[in-house]
Length: 468
Image 1 (cartoon, one colour):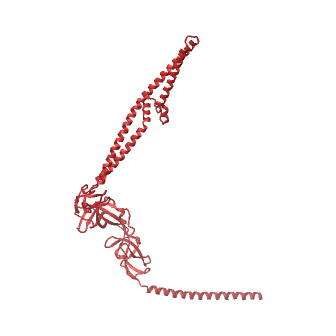
Image 2 (cartoon, helix red, strand yellow):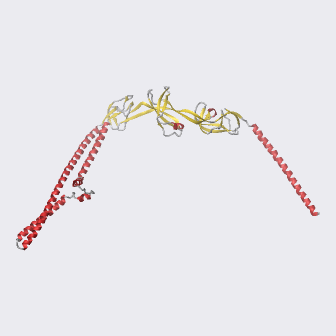
């Protein structure tokens, strides 16, 4: 009984504890709910107090546009020549004056230079001397060549004499052998035998002399001389002789070559002097108008000194500037329309030069268009060039009323987010017409921008809007 009672009391205590915990949880929930309700009420009150503006908006879309390329600039000189003197000299005659219209090759100034005239006389003498030296060397060569061909006959003659002497010696030796037999038998006297021996010795001496002479005379005419010089022995005797003659006239050929080199050098000097003397008359390198004449008769002119400037105004350049975005649409030789602002007239020209670089500061580049000067135009006139490329472009057009302009290329707009709040964006643009600009960076297609934004707008503000 006591054990059971104790158990009953213990169980009742646990139930009481659970009830207390439940009551505590309920009270905590009520407190948290009340706090949350209070906070939500404060937020709702803040939202209700937020000021909301109403604006017209515009949804950005890519559109295809067709436009020409235009650029502003000035007329410039197409062809200009600075005329300089190539030599020192004294002005003898002046043939033009400022403002004269002259043609290519017309005389401008004539100079005199006595030093060049004296130098020409000296060089002409050197030319004559070199020519005589060359003629002499050629004559010596021809004479030596003739003597060499004669020498072949001399060598043949000496060779024949040697062969005859060898035959005589052979005969004398045979005769001496027979005479010795007769002498041993007493058929001849000792004196006769000695005379025969003497004749044999004499012939042998003559043969040795002939052989020595032939060896000396044939030096340079032997086959081994050709081999030593690096030649092959020709099979034909005539070609062999020609080769030997060429081998033995090398020195004379060198003299001829040296004489030719000297003559050529002197002739070059003579041509140089003649060219310099030809520069005493200064002529116009181009057609055009003389801008000034800086020298007068009797004055000294130095080499490379300017004597006048000539402008060719039959053609001029319209030098204009374009945006870097237009560069891919320009080609050399394209026809252009050039508007002359001061005359209010258009003339036709063609693209002549496109600058190969873009200015890093302005992001623009220059184009030179050549025009025929049929309207008596002068350099410096203001022009506008239109290139009718009829370029079709897909561009993002932004209403000018949405743009907060900062400079010619950048500005700001307010973009509407999905929760109807606005945020400022920086955009890069270029002009298009009175209503729109072309946006290059900062916003995308299908984004919504605020038209006629107020000055006091701030990022994150909520607005109401209607589509325009």
